[in-house]
Amino acid sequence: MAAQIQAQHPEYWPETVRAMMVHSAEWTPAMLEELTATQSKRARYAMVRRFGYGVPSLERALASANNHVALFAQAEIQPFKRGGRKFNKCHYYTLPIPPNLLEGLGNERVELKVTLSYFIDPNPGLSANVDPQRYQSHGMRFDHQRRRETVARFKQRVNTAERPRGMRRPTFEGADPNWMLGEDSISAGSLHCDVWTGPAIDLLDRDTLCVKPVNGWWRNRASLEICNRKSRYALIVTLRALNPDVDIYTPIRTGIGLPVPVPIEIEV
Image 1: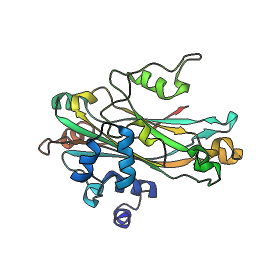
Image 2: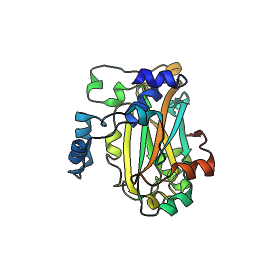
Image 3: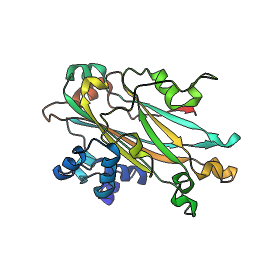
C-alpha cells in the first residue's frame, strides 16, 4: 500500500505516506463496539494499542469523496532553539471550512479526524524505558480550538510565548468529550490520530489547529548543533458527513478552492 501511494505521489514524504495509511483506516464494527462500550478514554487507547486504528483503505487514502474532504500539509519545524535551550516554534493552521457550511448542516453529525506523523531519533538508554522524553529526540502534539474559545485565547492556552509577561495560563473549558481517544491518548509515540464526532454546528468558530513541540533529548542532552535541528511532519485533517447523501466537498471547493494549508510559525 505504501508503495502504491508513493508511486502515485512521489512528492509525498515518508511521514506523509505513513500518515495517509493510518488516516485511511476505519475500525470494524466489532472494534468500534468495544471502543464505544467504555466511557474511559484511557481504556479506549489500550484497545487501540491492541488492534490499531482499524483497516486501512487505499481508495480512502488517495481520494476525497463528496462527503469526505481531506486537507494535507507537509512542513518543517524547529522544536528547540539554542539560546537557553527553549522551545522554538509552534505552527497554526486555519481549517478552510466555511462557517455557512457548518450553519447549513446544523445538527447533522460529522467526523473531524486529525493525524499527525513524524519521525524521532531514539535514545534507547536505561532511563528511556520509564521516561518517553528521554527516549525521543523531540515530540509533537496537535490541539484544536475549543467551544467558545477565541483564537487569541486558544493561542495563549497552548503557547506561553503568546501570553503577556506575568500572565498565567488562561482558564478554559474541560477537555472536549467528543474526541474518541482524548488528549492523554496522544501522550507518547510519534504518530497521533484521533476522531471528533458531533453536530456540525459545534465546530462553528473552531477553525484553528495547532502543532506544537514537546520535550525530548535534543533539548537537554544534545550538543547545540543537534538542539538546533529541524524535523519534518505531515498533518492530515478530514471532515466527513456521516450521512453519505450530504455533500460537503462541493461547497468547500466552490468557496475557497481547497488551497494547500500553510502553517503560521509563532515563537513558543
